[in-house]
Image 1 (cartoon, rainbow, N blue to C red):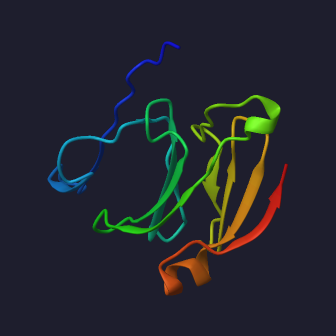
Image 2: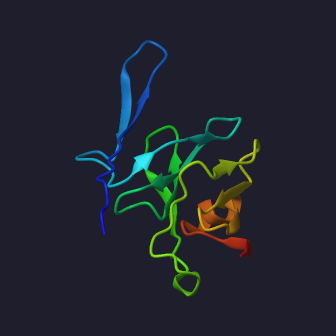
Length: 130
């Protein structure tokens, strides 16, 4: 099996161009970040991995400091022949920051209550569809 190394780093800058934070703080993610989601108030930054070793992670960061608030591991569905699963472009957050939604490359849809997840510092899955 051939796998290509995917790597990623997220940088946040102030309007004056100063670096505010970097995620991860050192090294790099072992996946590519294709798309970022941000709620309207700029509190939460969401993304999922595409390719690499960290492809099946959904992340919710504090958009002000780049710290992980919560994350969720999406396991592949071997019964359908999937050995890997990516989230890549299928991650978004509602404008009010209440819900985080992701769709995996194997066709599953996940809806999380971000408001409760932030309070509990762990993902609260409301709904999943295969």
